[in-house]
Length: 512
View 1 (tube, rainbow, N blue to C red):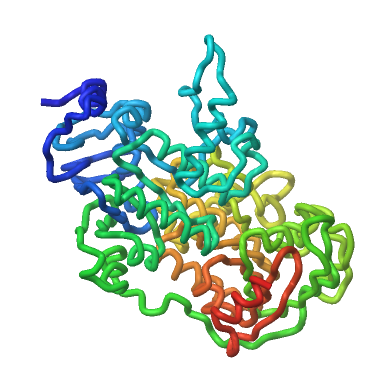
View 2 (cartoon, one colour):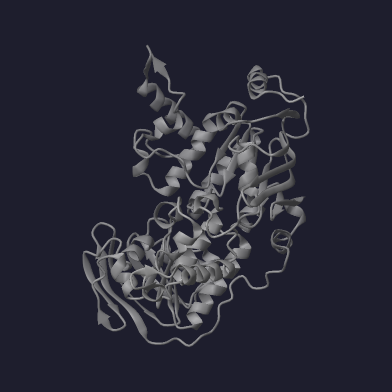
């Protein structure tokens, strides 16, 4: 018998909980979208008081299953059980009322409302029919004290860093007193210290008997926080194991169905002349006196903690936020990069950090997103776009990057986060740049795709492209860079050559 969500919610509120081995489970679930089978007869079982990691390449079906469990999608087939009772969740509100909360990879807060208003929306404390803001701020303070979160409840969300917005999302989910908490890539924008804080919160919640589903691509996190894990591949369930029973290589083989022998395929290539020279570059109140050179064939890694100014420097180099002082020389010539158009004309390309906000055009197709930077030159004749030629070129690039999409007409918003990232990378590779700026190029991308992107970056360096690669992942910076530039609070604190760079030396410079 299928129980309605309202009946199950009433059972939950009564405190009478059916006896069941699993807190939440799914069996034989299938979900199909136009042209794509996202899930094919998959299963998932979450025990009370455990952290269950969900692993798989982008497009494997992880987020689709979690959206079914969170009431966002309705499965075409299969059953979902909550505390042993079969239930049909028809909306996110159904899920929340039944104690299932999901923190999405793409944050869903309302920027022009306060932190407290975001957390208690639709549940605001009332006084004589009006919202009691004083009570709402007190409740938020109490919640934050319990989670050891130091954020002003009265500040607007738009004024928070991405990391603090993530903490607000977590607090909002906890505020529902949920039995199940689903976290989709919760550490993608967090510093090492913030990750430690998040893990303390997770351990406290686990000790209270809450079941936590943890979607991640980061192997070290799995072994640190997860009790067990399940692997999906190409929409199918592969297996579940205790995290203590397997190695990192075992998990990779399950995820990709093949060996990945070299995660960081850095090649020794000839380093040529300086193609980009930056002298005393500054942006008022953001970064100061940044100076460095990059040569053809060189990969310059840029490291630093969140807030160090790395991304701001990249945006200034590309003309998004023109510098207030300092000089930029391209190929030995002083150049005023006042806009991205000027940067592109000078053979520069920039992969932005935030693919949703400043990268992808979500409502447009894969083809439209890839071709937008090259609608000129050889693809335009007599004022008309050579559609056949550009479509064939984009098709080849999509295959090279293994973009999982039914066809190039699919809207980018329907792709997984990792495949959206591949579309962006393809856009800029099509411009055949001489200077390539990559800001967090593998954030939210699975282990197989990471290796592919690293190979592409090495290939471009071998072909003489100068690469600036910003990354928060220390193994990526150490494994791919010829040199590493480290920043702290808007200033360059030092440079390290590949043969001398270690994680400790980088962190010493990043925390000065």
